[in-house]
Length: 324
Image (cartoon, rainbow, N blue to C red; front, side, top):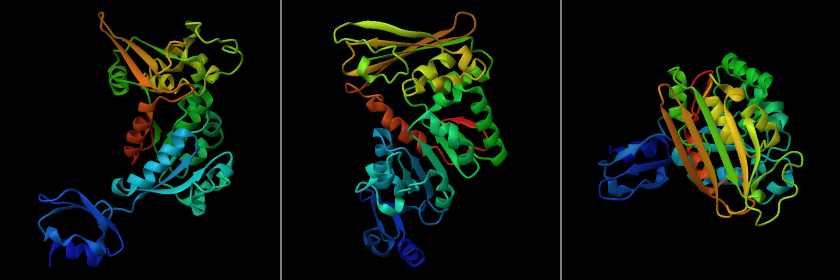
């Protein structure tokens, strides 16, 4: 019996994928497996012979949440993912956009959906209220790592990950070179880390009145410079890149990593993230990342695909915190 016949017999309703030297990547239900392969192709068995697809719960349905939900629905099967639920603070926003059976109206009932990974992409308050509970059942990817600037919550999340042997994932987001920073930190050679984030004033979501009086054409204004621990409560939705850096630079932490946020009316098309790393004996690295972004956008466009790539790594790395 040919390879494809074996597969159709064993997995008649499963979505399978094959790679054939004579044809492009094809996919479909196994009952209609392409006969042109004649057993000569290499089958990717990830959805058939390996474990069941990972069930993903998405908490938040803003721009980033919508992007991830769409990616899971369109590309998830090929990646071994399936959507378990979507929650939004305003459930009415989900009607007509998300199948009713996938809408979770009460977030405290998340465990009923038996998720393998829960992804938060809404607000640090959700991380505070539900993070340890999520980790008791699932791996947890924190899209608002600024929440970890709270040392008590940081400790609770790490303890929960260790206790339940689940991974607390921190996506790199707009941080360039996060793994390099982490390696330098782990080797004991990291001396200092500074991050500057510059955006059009319409792209900031700040607490207080730091930017209440901005005017178009005013140019560049430094809003705050200090530790990331101080910055996170002031701009919880804007400095998640800095928070990810503080996790990578664990020996410095949120109080040791320094940050600066800059309002610049000239930045109408992109956000700028500058990272300055200092090591021993004069070693230093300075990177500048320009992330295309529309006026008013909190998240730059390149960060969306970065989140998706981070999610693809969330398949279990033990009971610890993990930069992905």
